[in-house]
Length: 267
Image (cartoon, rainbow, N blue to C red; front, side, top):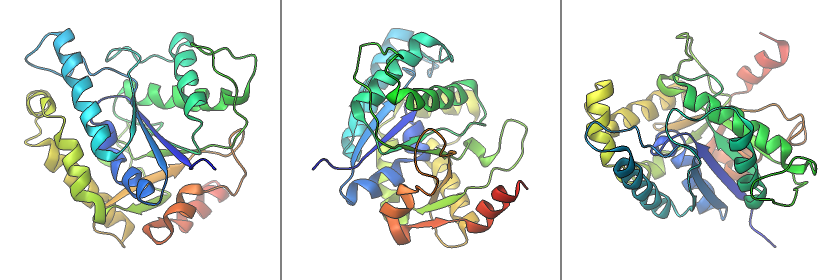
């Protein structure tokens, strides 16, 4: 019998480590197979090197991070700022998702601070929706999949949408026990320290991740370090009550029932 599978799909090298590596580590500890993919190559994330050299450096860094997390690594599809919601990339991403056949997909928030994140989210949702459509052709061709999949959206960077509005998680995952490992995985992206210091004024990308993790933990009112998640609507993907992340993680996952009730009421 095959193991259940979780697939983290983000825009750039280091996004997975920032937003969802803790959840991946907890799932792997419970016997899940985990997969790792960044849609963009990271070629623009530099203040020092050429596009080709940066692309090669970041590919190597992301492969090291995936190994550290115990994840199956998948190559990128396009360059930075070229993540568009268009058919060529959609067909290629759909092929990867069909091949991996995940039970859970972890991806970006639909609202975030940059287009690569939001377009990756849109591509992931559509590619997963098309997993069982025989007339939607993937590149390369892959057989359709009829299995259920549940999509979870991570918190946007800064925990706010592009209009500065606060985004509240529907569920919190306690990542305290794996935070050191998550930090170690993020530290493999050494090229990002120079880039983020120069481009965004971050004194340390590791401390920035720590701060976000602690902030989500405070929002939970339960955990010291946490990752926050919002579950995508089930229609076309899974049963209405399907919540495999909560089922897999048990006490390490706190579902924000008050938030879900507000959503049901349309508040």
